[in-house]
Length: 182
Figure: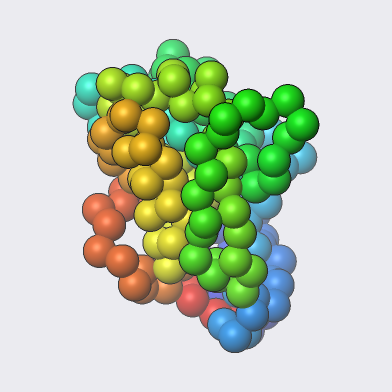
């Protein structure tokens, strides 16, 4: 990773990207990782991350939006199924698991939703949580609570990038550390 005053450049699996910066609540400006619409970068990151999936994992779990393409590619490469928690209730959901998430890095508290058929696919399974970026650990903690409420157990936590020092002592595996602010 290289960094100039306003840019952060990463190289993962031979694919280089200069990350734009975005204002993130009280954190100031932070590098913005984008997997949506960038299949080349997503595939390169997933190819590097697939070896980090804990042994015995049976299902991957992520949250909409940016980490979804990454989880999809990890699923493709590993042969493991994945489930996705939504940030909004959908009309078809019946008896979903609903979990409030603490204020996120971007300064927005959210509610996560997992429809009951998807939750049933986690029951009795070892589940690895997949994220694009880990910063505060709030999303990971919320996803872990959903896994537990679904009857599964967390096998591990994976992220493409770590940003800053996590306030939670979760045992994350990640590819590269990003600056907390730029």
